[in-house]
Length: 101
Image 1 (tube, one colour):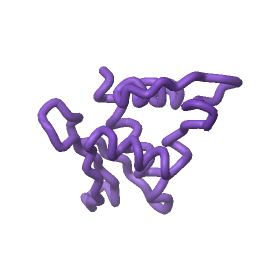
Image 2 (tube, rainbow, N blue to C red):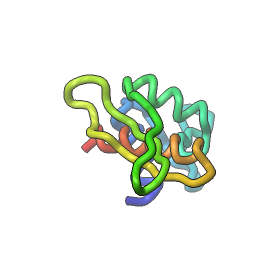
Image 3 (cartoon, rainbow, N blue to C red):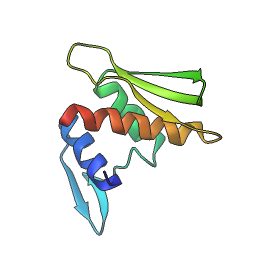
């Protein structure tokens, strides 16, 4: 799935009216991109009642996101080596995108 598809599905799950202009997603007059912006990802996580945590297994360190109510997404894992915030944002968006399916 492309980043654009992830963002479109995440926006749909959160009932956000995101418009695409010149290849960028806009919410109102502001660019909305929780894959790149920590604040957008945090707001998405809060709106959808997602739970975020870190784990270590045989494959390495990963961030995981869970829905905290019935019907929320199963666990979404995003492994990382150095950029934890990027992994966190991607896991949040992936979990939100699953909710739109």
